[in-house]
Image 1: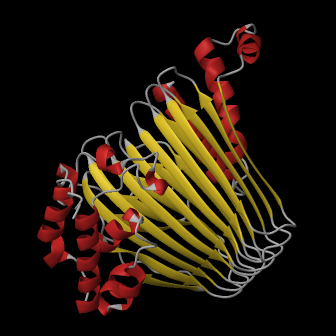
Image 2: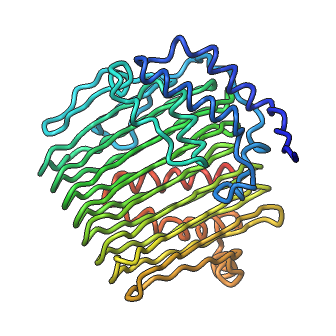
Length: 423
């Protein structure tokens, strides 16, 4: 019999197993939750971290890239000022949430309550055998928030889900239900620092009922040595509209997954992503989008700025079911590669089983236009300032689509600061 020998655990894999053994007594949950956690950790230990042999992880060989897993200890971290004044901040500091009051029309529950009651047990199941983020988060998650926006409710203030970490480990989960006709803007913000190396995972699950309109903004600002694994799962009902904005401007190793299931006729998805990559960082944005019913639309634009030895990945898969006639899905990935040592891999995919659709995808990799640079420099602008202006124009077009002027200004300033620090 030819038996395949299982490779020895890497240092990171062993550290995860050891971390779980140390934290198990401190992790909240009833017997069902504890059993689910055990099963998830067992699967991680048995299968190991994903390698390039697994198609969905082909460009992010986590077994080689995740080299260090910090101990679960806690360092000093505190709630940050919100990006937009007056926002309802729901903080998770080093993996622990806080008691907060909810506005009228919103039901709010700390996720730890769902763990303790056992209600969360069924929520911890991964998407599949390749779902390392779901497994890891399910095994270690300690807190987060679950909220429901009642039918017809329109929130005036932004909700900022704020995950703050200073080294160690932090594993959060956010559940958001938007009932029929409700409207909201949510900022999911991940903050780290350069003082300590951190590992974080975050899983967000969105449910949009008929006619709900939601803007969900993910702002990832981890420290230069941090490792962040994020996942967003969304399901859209009839005539629902979801706009997702992703801004990645930090972290050494980042993977942000986006899984969207369009299940109601008339539903629409917009995805806008800006990846700012520098140093020797590795950032992977992976999208799976399923159009399951007729008369649905989507638009995805990803723009990347690559400096130094950074490496980026965009995997975008659109699946159109046989029943999903009259689907209109458009996807584009555009990269400014401003270095000879940097890399960006784009893998757009279309799987179309319907015959009456409009679907397209495209990818470009370019440098800054020399004629545009010359034009600006001929008018007395320094080369560095001219480059920054052109890069700003490349990404600000997407940020400007956000329908909140103050948030747009803050995010544009974030881009400008990143360019000042790295360009």
